[in-house]
Image (cartoon, rainbow, N blue to C red; front, top):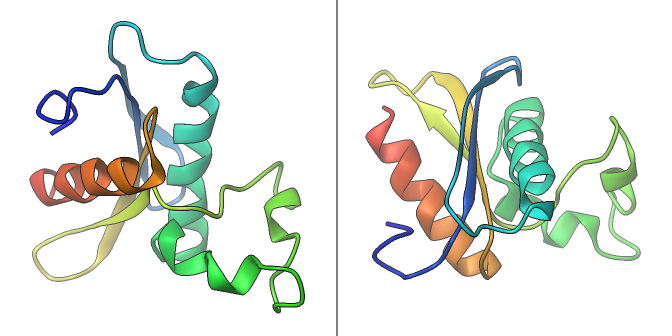
Length: 116
């Protein structure tokens, strides 16, 4: 998917406990996106939801405002997606960074589907 949309990305996969399982960095992808992709995957795994679902809850005045500063740094914008098995059980998460948050999310969803 990342190749199809002509973007260079860092892609991180963690297990359900947020432990690193796999990582891929496309040639020319931003170095800063290495950490971001890992944090997106960890955030999704730790909170058992896609990072896109956190966007509204972390705005100023919202109940989770500033949560991104906890747990050694979280990422609370799209690009972290849960990976579920065929029974719907969470088996991990994928984090993608290197493009717009919309593209990151799209690639993460595609990756999660492949890893089912």
